[in-house]
Length: 498
Ligand SMILES: Cc1cc2nc3c(=O)[nH]c(=O)nc-3n(C[C@H](O)[C@H](O)[C@H](O)COP(=O)(O)OP(=O)(O)OC[C@H]3O[C@@H](n4cnc5c(N)ncnc54)[C@H](O)[C@@H]3O)c2cc1C
Image (cartoon, rainbow, N blue to C red; front, side, top):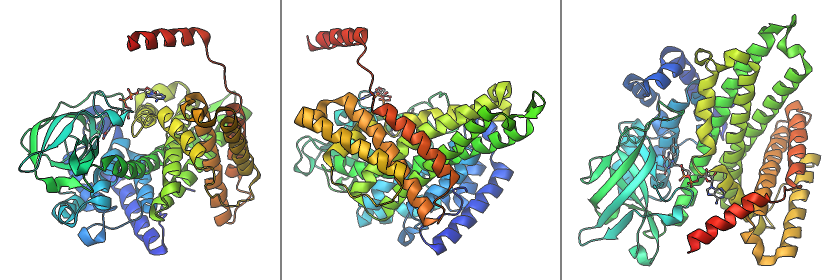
């Protein structure tokens, strides 16, 4: 099974199927992933062709010229694009996700009327920018400020690693906005246009992967904009951006599903056609097991991303946060694991660029870092689980899913009992709980999917259950702290405290 043509409704599934078909045709004619990687840019005619297909408007509301597709459907389209080229999928995915979500979900009627129609046709491209040199994982530490003036706002500072930077005309920025909306230390989402005086885009970064995707810094030197450019309530950016990031993480995770599918396809061909010791590779137990593991992981990734997307469409805020974090972590790690195994099974040929596997590997790597470094997200997920002990969970009657859930709840209860409120400072344990959460979420999603499809005996689910149980058991047996690292840590902390 593939991500193809999955929508929230039958009508949407049909629209999505047509879009995906068109993407495959466009890919055959115009998408040359190795050339995009080599030239470090997506050719203009290809960007125009993507716009003609309506991809820039797929997640935008019909009222403003978009297709109004659910994130479920958008995810399947992004997955199809990522099967052909990750840089192209990133351009569209960033626009459809992080780039426009703030405007769609929280923008004023005036901002929507002004910007969405052009963003829907692709006449204008969107970017999102939160990260700064000193504020990456710690977005509470933003130094770029928006200060109220007589005429509106004045923005000063700088941003780094902005995807789509050189193509974008519209930027959603998360900035510190002391005093705005009455919040002394608040943050706000502000919309900037490429032509705003004082905004400069830096040079293209030279990257390990996603080399066709534009990444650059923004320099903001007294950029003056009207106060009406604030997206949503001034001073509430910290809360609003959580929703935007959750949406973006799921869109990105859908790309991981598609790219991993490309690696799986190459691997199926390789292990069935390549012969060694007089037999095709798949004849060897170890190879068959590796392929089975890849397929099971892929099934889990796809199931979890779909379920996370449904949480957006169902407006289930509590579930959205947990599932978007779990989907981002599991899909990015699964993508990496699948592509790495694909490379291994291609032997020496897997190391040669022409075969396409190295590009999949290089492109996959950043997904464990951007849209939140995985270790940071795992700790957040563990924290969430500790705080929402009564979160509802469907009765699935799936033994492995229930086992992992009970293990997780036992661990949470034991920690709370021994540490009380200090549990929120126990980063190693929260991270471990985060991992257990991911495994619980993926098993729940896969079991639910198998039940809905009336395929409870689905072999990929059975294999996924074994993998997840093994990994969950490892999470319950944490390593002791490494003494010499602990000494180094104390020294550094002492020195920085001085
Ligand atoms: C190609 C690319 C495109 C990007 N596009 C965008 C974009 O469009 N918009 C945008 O705003 N940002 C973008 N980013 C930035 C990205 O989101 C950040 O790089 C990411 O959030 C990590 O921040 P950092 O790089 O500052 O790493 P740091 O915060 O310095 O962290 C470094 C590493 O330390 C570890 N770490 C840090 N804190 C903790 C912790 N509390 N617990 C455990 N481990 C921890 C993690 O392993 C982490 O990877 C992009 C980055 C890249 C590389």
